[in-house]
Structure formats: C-alpha cells, structure tokens
Length: 571
Image (cartoon, rainbow, N blue to C red):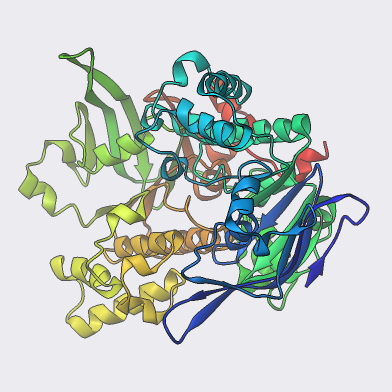
C-alpha cells in the first residue's frame, strides 16, 4: 500500500514496499511488516500510530538500520530512499555514517539505552567525535551547550553525572541531546513519553516541537497515544498487524477518520471532558460506526451513606537516606495521609513520580512498614496485626503492581501463576475447577486459552500486565490496589481492562484504590480523587468536581499539562 498524503512537500525519506519478517525457527517465519509504503516530508512531523505488534517500531528500525541481522529478513523488493541512496542496500560503513549524523533515534526507555558506567558528557560527546571529528575538549563544550538546549539545569554539573543520578525526564533529555548532537535531518522518536509523568511528558513534547521548528528537521513520532499525536503531528499513518490501514493529514484523521480501526483507536481512549457508559474496544467497530457503549454515563461519586470498607488515618512512611559519607537521615515519603474507601467505589490517587502514591499503596498492603498511622479494615487495624494475623487478610486485599516483569515468576507457566494462589487460599474444589476459573480469567483479560501453557517471557509487556491482573482476580478480593496497572497497555487493551474492572466492581462490589499519573484514566474509573504532592494530599474532591473546578495550584498544573489531542491544537 502506497501512502503519500503530502505530495506537494519535498520528500526526505521514501519508504517503498517495506517487507520485514523474522525467523521463529528453522521452518517458520513471522511477517512483521507487510509491504508498506509512505513518505516522510522535509521539516514536518509524521506520526506512526498503532498498537503493540503493529510493526511501527520494526519499520523505524529498518529506516535506521538496526534490525537484527541474524533473525530479520528484509525483502529484496523493499527500498528506503534517502539522499538518492537505498539504505537497505548500503554497506555497513556508509550506514554508520548516516546513522547518528543524518538520521538519529530516541528510544522509549532511556535507562536501557544509556551506558550506566559512562557519564552523560562522554556519551553525548562520542557521536560528535566520531561524526564531526571534534576534539574531546570541543565535544564536551558542545555537549554542555546541548544539555542547556534540551533544558537540563546546571549543565556544567550534570555533564559529569551518570544516568542513575538523573530523573526519568532528565534521562530522556540526555537521549534527545545525543540524538540532535550532529543536527540530523530526521529524528525518530519511539514512544519517548510513554513512561513519563504528565508534566514531564508535556516538557518533552514541547521540547521536541521546538527543536523540530528551530532545526528544521523531520520527526517520525511513534506512539499509541492519539492525544499526543493530535498535538504534534502534521501527518498520521495508522498501522495494524504490519499493514497501513489509513493515512492522511492530522486534521483529516482526527476530524473525519475513514477506517473502522482508526475510529476505534480514537474512541477507546478515555477523555477528560466526558465519560462514556463503557469504553469502546476495537471489536465494537467491526460492524458498527456508533457503538451503543458510547452513550454518556451518569455522574460518578461517593455518597455520605456509603459503608466504608477501608480507612487510612494519618499514615506516614519514612525511609533512611544517605546524608554524607557515614551518616543517614530519615526522608518522609508519605506524610499524614488519611482517606476513606467506600465499598464498591473507587478512590483515584494521582501525582507525579516521587509524590508518594505508590509508597502509600505498598504501605497499606504492609509491603512497607508504616512509620505512623492506622489502616482500618473489617474492624481491625491492619498495621497493628501480627504477621500470622494479617495472613488471613492478604486474600481480601490484593495489589496489581506497576511492573509486570518483576511480579511474575519466570519459571512458572501462566496456568501455574493463576492456579497457585487458588491452591494456597482454598479457592475451587479441585484442580479441574481451578483450571476452569483460570480459563475464564484468560478470556476476561483478552488472552487466548493457549496462553496458560506459556511462560511470562513469551509475552509482551502489555500481555504480562493482563496476566498480573488475572492473578489478582483469582482471589476475588474486597479491595484491589491498582498501581499504574494500565499504564503499559495499548489503548484498546487498556479499554478492555478498565471495562473489566468496572464489570467486576458492578458484579462483586469490589473497591479500588486506583493509582496513576494518567488523568483521563483516573477520571473515568474514579468516584473520588486524591491529588498527592511531596508525600501529602493537597486536594481531594469528587472526580467530576476536581476536573471542572480544581482548587490547588498543583492540580491545575497537572490538568494543564495533560495532552488534549487535536482539539487543543486547533484552539
């Protein structure tokens, strides 16, 4: 399929009939990209949109020449033309010259891309020395200028820092400085803001937009977040299962999408300004352009008469941190937090990284020892119980962790991961019944039956998160703490999981503490919202109230930073 929605503009990169397959074993290959064609015009931003497995990152890796040679197969009929050269046919020396100098890339996870044992100054200077033949002194001087350009404060000091000494936003800025060091013609940004807080995300998006205009370079922006795309893109290409389903100007894609899949992606994402009865999923658009699920939902909120299932009173948590060479001092991560969680309701907890929201969730579960406070559940102060006494409450309060990589046993099959907690807590009369429950949970979280025989490493990050959610649901808990539990998911899978959580709440009266930095998701799922900053709750109100009439300056700052999509770009 050939896509050229911008024929009047000068073309910087032309992708022609790109076909990429991967060897699975000696006899089988997987077709990841199936003959796609598109242009990247000069001095513009093209967004490549799609879910995990759609082929967007593979396409970008092909452009920059980073596909694994031992397992990838690129069709000899494919071509990627830059400066009248086919990048797929270039020798290694020419490709190295182009990569980093003419075409560079920002990766999704900076800590996986930055060398942990080399200071950031040397990492930025390396490409300047290799491609521009600068001396080390000249390269370091230019590195300081680049750190200043990407908004790193105190560049003289930070240039000597190691990656682990920087925050996530600072690490991403260092990656951008490395990518723009040689003034490339094309910057490929692969999900550069997915893991960042909303305020840091806003800073990075604004930075990329300013750099694109100032340096007159093209940007290929890869993401699954259409709100972000609506703000930054000139042209949009929608991919699914290795094929281009729709392409055009950002205006045409957002105002009059033609393909059912594009319409579904736009509808799946929760919005800050409205709340549907249920979130749409991809299947809703297979045979219908206006699914019934899109009707408006009634206002959410807690009532004064709702029974309280869990109450936190004055919960605080200190950590000991290094203070000098030999001394340590306490750092208060959570300070005097109190809230009430009604039965069958959802309390949302929002704030940036370091605000204390995850620490609070872990403290409620006694995975951190509280410094002070009480947590009342079923007439008992959970923080005062002995280990044996608390054991009986573990089934009734469950947590879905943020990182599915660390929370699933790599030596257990998915079936064992789901069945083991049922065995421990006596759920199900026998193995057959437990297996049946596991099968049902797989269906609920959108994974095929064959998944039960597989191991965690055989799944994507989003699939692993769904397995982690299914494991918690085996207990049918009274209270479920969701710690960034949908942040790693594509928008359609995120919609499925949020709908699932809502169904379980309606069916079983489950109560949720929903922790997230995604303001639209928190508003959709929550009845009451607490805003945390520096370990303290700075504002609390009903979900609709806090979005329509925020009171605290920090809440207003968070809402102002949230991507608002195409609508914000046109106003």
